[in-house]
Length: 84
Figure 1 (cartoon, rainbow, N blue to C red):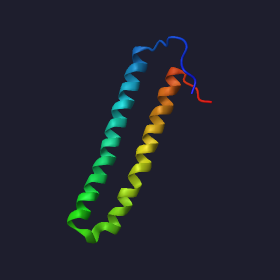
Figure 2 (cartoon, one colour):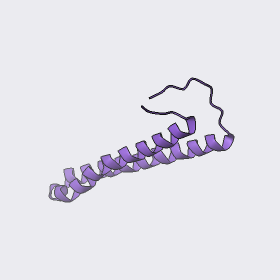
Figure 3 (cartoon, one colour):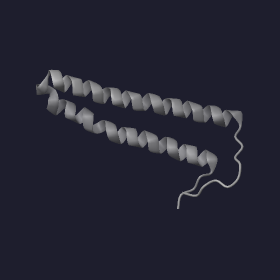
């Protein structure tokens, strides 16, 4: 990743947009983590549900990763951060 070497000026709208995207990211990640916790608790109290809940458990980490990657791409684009 190439570090920024010059100051970056953002418009108020750009800052607001990034803040909204960050808020959405936090909300989405919390939702995915809540599903993981709910599935875990359900398995703890009803072990017969383990197979069904395993689908929910295994779907969440890739969704979290995708959400973080999407925000990171948008963030890096706004600030002109390049990789490579």
